[in-house]
Image (cartoon, rainbow, N blue to C red):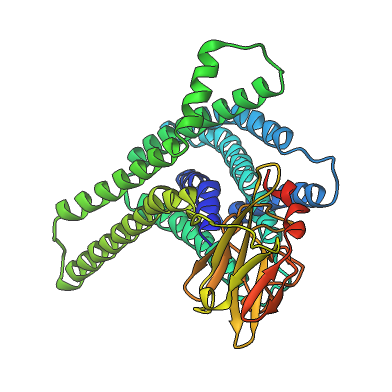
Length: 420
């Protein structure tokens, strides 16, 4: 569940903020924005959908080339965009000069918004295909949790876009234009670094120490640009709050004063909303990322040795508590082969390797009454442990004899390559 909260936040937060600023710029250009936003969305989603289909079903789609083509297009269009929107804003009193530049500005903004959407949508189209990996059936709580985290994070990003747009709408056009220019310049800088990274890796350009140092800095500080845009959001919220504090409660009649007060309360709610959304984003990229990256520390395997008959013998009383027990057997070449045992019901035990065919020897851990794969976080149905398939532990043959689980060591010797 955590992995998709983090993935979607990483993938969509900055594009969501940029989308809000681009839509605000379309509004300032003085033309209806609904059709233009819909056109940008359809164009961006169409491009992303074609790529996602090719990526999913063929081997010809390469994400680096896809991103490179979009980002290079962005670098060209952004120059025309910033120049034209400021010309339109500064020539507001000259309708003839304004109209020509306004047309160019609208076209550029639509294209930029389409590129912004096309950059973010492929992952959103493809992530759901990962949800069921390692599962025998999609009808389980883990699959549902992944969909919930995926959907709620997308809704949060839409929420951020809407409220940044509404906050910008309440501020002066000159201030918002300056803010938009700063945000687009920062995003363009990020795109430039991404282009440099792709071109260095693909050997399209020769090695440049200063450029490589810049790329390494960004890769070493994965949250850097997200934090920059969180700060931009906070500045917007602060300016709107200050505006509400300094707005004079003056009107020609009590009804107008009540209207001013209502607008101030609404602005404060917007401020609280964007602060809450920014706080959730910050928590996701810090604490939740730390929890996810840290992973779960697998408990050490209890060493096990052979009895006088050359067999592995484990008393049932030792594993009858319903908890997951991990054991380690040292093979003849010194490899430690781990296996797990858990009591499934009154007379049934699940015995398997501490590894599966999908995730390898990453191991399992117990979370409450659940057994979970430490790599993919898939929850095992305890009743199916001991049976092949999905992310279940690789089954291990055993017998219950005289109150003991008995395992032949040659079964473990045969599986030692999984743990090397």
